[in-house]
Length: 501
Ligand code: HEM
Image (cartoon, rainbow, N blue to C red; front, side, top):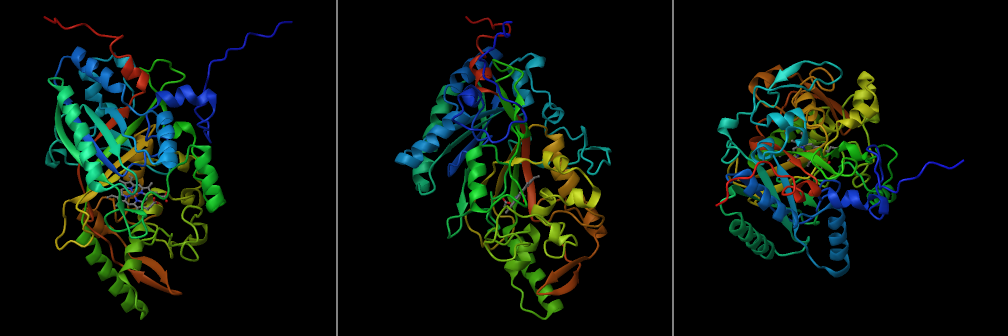
């Protein structure tokens, strides 16, 4: 009996974990999916260039087709980071994202446009209904984000068709060198883009660091510690560093990757949905409120409590990243959960990291299967913008986070996390309150919030303090990062041609 013919076609399972970049079977997949999705590009400076197409779809396609040759695939990103490690050579990272209106401006067939409903509606559609109910309480809510797009900064209240992401610089590269390099790249784009598109704006991002050279955000807290892990090599390094017994950061490929319906091969071409939010931070307000909370706790405990500790209660981590539940400083950064703190006495239930990654709370409290909770995770790829002054004299200085997250389902990941968890005063339990950093902070909700119990230096106290007005959304949009083959194939697969004279 002859055995059936075997095909040597490479393949990847959507549920696959522990990807190996050297697996020949995966090479074609990793060459077609853009970089900065499965792993951060790691560059120190970036430019986010927002475009509105104004050419005919044919011209738009021609330009994108040319631009596609400079995109950095996941595979190339790996090669360039090896090169940087081995020889110090820096490489430009380039990415390209399209909004739903961008696909329409290119006249892409509807069946080749990614079909996530939030993506198709766009972030500015405040009438669209979403289901972000946690714990099986499913009520569709209009505009759960509570955004007011008409008040957003230009260009976010305009039609945004595409976002180009350029990034450059190692952790020690001079700011000026990076800025000059990136400005020069933008000048090249400007001269090639001619009548095809208008550059609506350019957001400048950079990695902010503390004196230990750790990446921080503008309130001064180490950031980027906990993110889903896709590659085996990254998993191995977490396992060697601190273990994964209490929290395993591993994620399956399809936590972020979705088949690109316009890609060259439906089994091998992948993209992801990006959420973009420009978030201004009230640094002075945060420092002031942390001092107020510190005084309140000091009064209640008769101990001298510093404002760093009070600030840590907003995040669930100390400034250096140590979780509030850790037994000692630098004990662990990611291998922890809240099993030993089920009253929320050490790490408040409302703290930013407990709201956005409950690490099993939903299972312990509501019997939600742990895999369900983990399926709501997002991949964060944000970067700071604005002034580097971490002690400004006034509130709402021009500084904050260019929040970027990747996910395979915007409603079930970003929107559940933002609206069902952070903004929801009753998540994970009644009267928890909102997330002080990014939760909905209007007065109506704040007035309803009850006191919370906290344990400090062995004393349990009751607090009715709530952080307010720490972050403001200045704009945003939903995008898709198409496969590189989709962009390279744009001119072979043309709609009706314009009448070129
Ligand atoms: C200005 C806005 C924000 C600031 C300053 C901020 C800051 C931080 C910091 C300092 C951490 C701890 C470091 C870490 O665990 O990696 C963190 C973690 C996290 N943040 Fe944010 N964040 C912001 C917005 C958001 C938004 C909008 C979301 C999602 C809706 C989000 C989701 C998360 C998640 C999922 C984690 C990891 C939690 C964990 O796995 O334990 N953040 N953020």
